[in-house]
Image (spheres, rainbow, N blue to C red):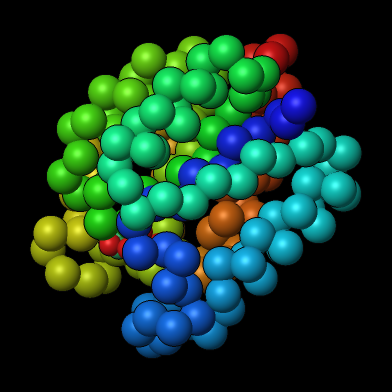
Length: 149
Ligand code: DQA
Protein backbone atom coordinates (compact mmCIF):
# COMPACT_ATOMS: atom_id res chain seq x y z
CA UNK A 1 0.00 0.00 0.00
CA UNK A 2 1.16 3.49 -0.79
CA UNK A 3 0.03 7.02 0.02
CA UNK A 4 1.06 8.97 -3.03
CA UNK A 5 1.32 8.05 -6.69
CA UNK A 6 4.20 9.57 -8.66
CA UNK A 7 3.63 9.48 -12.42
CA UNK A 8 6.32 10.09 -15.02
CA UNK A 9 5.18 10.31 -18.63
CA UNK A 10 6.62 10.03 -22.06
CA UNK A 11 10.41 10.36 -22.54
CA UNK A 12 11.08 11.01 -18.88
CA UNK A 13 13.01 7.74 -18.56
CA UNK A 14 15.61 9.62 -20.66
CA UNK A 15 16.43 12.18 -17.95
CA UNK A 16 20.21 12.35 -17.59
CA UNK A 17 20.67 11.51 -21.27
CA UNK A 18 18.40 14.16 -22.76
CA UNK A 19 18.92 17.93 -23.30
CA UNK A 20 20.95 18.60 -20.13
CA UNK A 21 20.51 22.37 -20.56
CA UNK A 22 16.82 21.86 -19.78
CA UNK A 23 16.81 18.72 -17.67
CA UNK A 24 20.24 18.54 -16.03
CA UNK A 25 22.26 15.39 -15.51
CA UNK A 26 20.27 13.40 -12.98
CA UNK A 27 18.67 10.16 -14.12
CA UNK A 28 15.07 9.31 -13.37
CA UNK A 29 16.34 6.70 -10.89
CA UNK A 30 18.23 9.44 -9.03
CA UNK A 31 15.16 11.68 -8.99
CA UNK A 32 13.10 8.77 -7.68
CA UNK A 33 15.70 8.16 -4.96
CA UNK A 34 15.33 11.80 -3.86
CA UNK A 35 11.57 11.29 -3.68
CA UNK A 36 11.92 8.08 -1.67
CA UNK A 37 14.24 9.88 0.76
CA UNK A 38 11.74 12.70 1.19
CA UNK A 39 8.89 10.21 1.59
CA UNK A 40 10.83 8.46 4.37
CA UNK A 41 11.32 11.83 6.06
CA UNK A 42 7.58 12.56 5.77
CA UNK A 43 6.67 9.03 6.89
CA UNK A 44 4.72 8.19 3.73
CA UNK A 45 4.94 5.55 1.01
CA UNK A 46 5.18 6.12 -2.72
CA UNK A 47 4.16 4.20 -5.79
CA UNK A 48 6.28 5.41 -8.72
CA UNK A 49 5.31 4.64 -12.33
CA UNK A 50 6.81 5.64 -15.67
CA UNK A 51 5.51 4.80 -19.13
CA UNK A 52 5.93 5.96 -22.70
CA UNK A 53 2.47 4.62 -23.60
CA UNK A 54 -0.47 6.95 -23.15
CA UNK A 55 -3.01 4.15 -22.69
CA UNK A 56 -0.90 2.59 -19.94
CA UNK A 57 -0.77 5.94 -18.17
CA UNK A 58 -4.57 6.30 -18.47
CA UNK A 59 -5.02 2.82 -16.97
CA UNK A 60 -2.62 3.55 -14.09
CA UNK A 61 -4.61 6.70 -13.32
CA UNK A 62 -7.89 4.73 -13.38
CA UNK A 63 -6.42 2.18 -10.95
CA UNK A 64 -5.64 5.02 -8.53
CA UNK A 65 -9.38 5.34 -7.88
CA UNK A 66 -9.35 2.09 -5.89
CA UNK A 67 -5.77 1.48 -4.72
CA UNK A 68 -5.56 3.83 -1.73
CA UNK A 69 -3.82 6.69 -3.54
CA UNK A 70 -4.21 9.84 -1.41
CA UNK A 71 -2.67 12.28 -3.93
CA UNK A 72 -0.95 12.22 -7.30
CA UNK A 73 2.19 13.99 -8.51
CA UNK A 74 2.45 13.93 -12.31
CA UNK A 75 5.00 15.05 -14.86
CA UNK A 76 3.28 14.06 -18.08
CA UNK A 77 6.12 15.25 -20.34
CA UNK A 78 4.91 16.33 -23.78
CA UNK A 79 1.46 14.82 -23.12
CA UNK A 80 0.97 17.82 -20.84
CA UNK A 81 0.42 20.00 -23.85
CA UNK A 82 -2.13 18.00 -25.83
CA UNK A 83 -3.48 14.90 -24.09
CA UNK A 84 -7.18 15.37 -23.43
CA UNK A 85 -7.22 11.64 -22.65
CA UNK A 86 -4.94 12.18 -19.64
CA UNK A 87 -6.91 15.26 -18.62
CA UNK A 88 -10.15 13.26 -18.65
CA UNK A 89 -8.53 10.38 -16.74
CA UNK A 90 -7.19 12.71 -14.02
CA UNK A 91 -10.60 14.38 -13.78
CA UNK A 92 -12.08 11.04 -12.65
CA UNK A 93 -9.98 11.08 -9.45
CA UNK A 94 -11.22 12.44 -6.13
CA UNK A 95 -7.76 13.19 -4.71
CA UNK A 96 -5.44 16.19 -5.25
CA UNK A 97 -3.25 16.10 -8.35
CA UNK A 98 -0.05 18.17 -8.51
CA UNK A 99 1.51 18.93 -11.90
CA UNK A 100 5.30 19.18 -12.03
CA UNK A 101 7.87 20.02 -14.69
CA UNK A 102 11.64 20.00 -14.42
CA UNK A 103 12.12 22.88 -16.86
CA UNK A 104 10.54 26.34 -16.83
CA UNK A 105 8.03 25.56 -19.56
CA UNK A 106 6.96 29.23 -19.69
CA UNK A 107 10.45 30.30 -20.78
CA UNK A 108 10.53 27.77 -23.64
CA UNK A 109 8.71 27.25 -26.96
CA UNK A 110 5.13 28.57 -27.19
CA UNK A 111 3.62 25.07 -27.41
CA UNK A 112 4.95 24.36 -23.92
CA UNK A 113 3.24 27.39 -22.38
CA UNK A 114 -0.15 25.70 -22.23
CA UNK A 115 -1.00 22.64 -20.18
CA UNK A 116 -4.26 20.85 -20.88
CA UNK A 117 -3.82 19.13 -17.49
CA UNK A 118 -3.63 22.25 -15.31
CA UNK A 119 -7.40 22.69 -15.17
CA UNK A 120 -7.78 19.35 -13.37
CA UNK A 121 -4.74 19.83 -11.10
CA UNK A 122 -4.58 21.59 -7.74
CA UNK A 123 -1.55 23.52 -8.95
CA UNK A 124 1.64 23.25 -10.91
CA UNK A 125 5.36 23.58 -10.21
CA UNK A 126 7.87 24.17 -13.00
CA UNK A 127 11.45 25.20 -13.48
CA UNK A 128 13.27 23.88 -10.44
CA UNK A 129 14.81 20.73 -11.88
CA UNK A 130 14.60 17.71 -9.54
CA UNK A 131 13.49 20.07 -6.79
CA UNK A 132 10.20 20.52 -8.72
CA UNK A 133 9.39 16.90 -7.84
CA UNK A 134 10.31 17.35 -4.18
CA UNK A 135 8.17 20.49 -3.98
CA UNK A 136 5.40 18.58 -5.74
CA UNK A 137 5.54 15.78 -3.19
CA UNK A 138 5.46 18.30 -0.33
CA UNK A 139 2.44 19.98 -1.96
CA UNK A 140 0.67 16.63 -2.40
CA UNK A 141 1.36 15.75 1.24
CA UNK A 142 0.04 19.10 2.44
CA UNK A 143 -3.08 18.91 0.27
CA UNK A 144 -3.92 15.33 1.20
CA UNK A 145 -3.49 16.16 4.88
CA UNK A 146 -5.61 19.30 4.63
CA UNK A 147 -8.35 17.34 2.84
CA UNK A 148 -8.28 14.70 5.58
CA UNK A 149 -7.47 11.96 3.06
C1 DQA B 1 8.70 18.57 -19.18
C2 DQA B 1 8.37 19.74 -20.11
C3 DQA B 1 7.64 19.27 -21.36
O1 DQA B 1 7.37 20.38 -22.20
C4 DQA B 1 8.51 18.28 -22.11
O2 DQA B 1 7.81 17.79 -23.23
C5 DQA B 1 9.02 17.17 -21.26
C6 DQA B 1 9.47 17.47 -19.89
C7 DQA B 1 9.56 19.00 -17.97
O3 DQA B 1 9.66 18.22 -17.03
O4 DQA B 1 10.13 20.10 -17.99
O5 DQA B 1 9.14 16.04 -21.71
O6 DQA B 1 7.49 18.04 -18.67
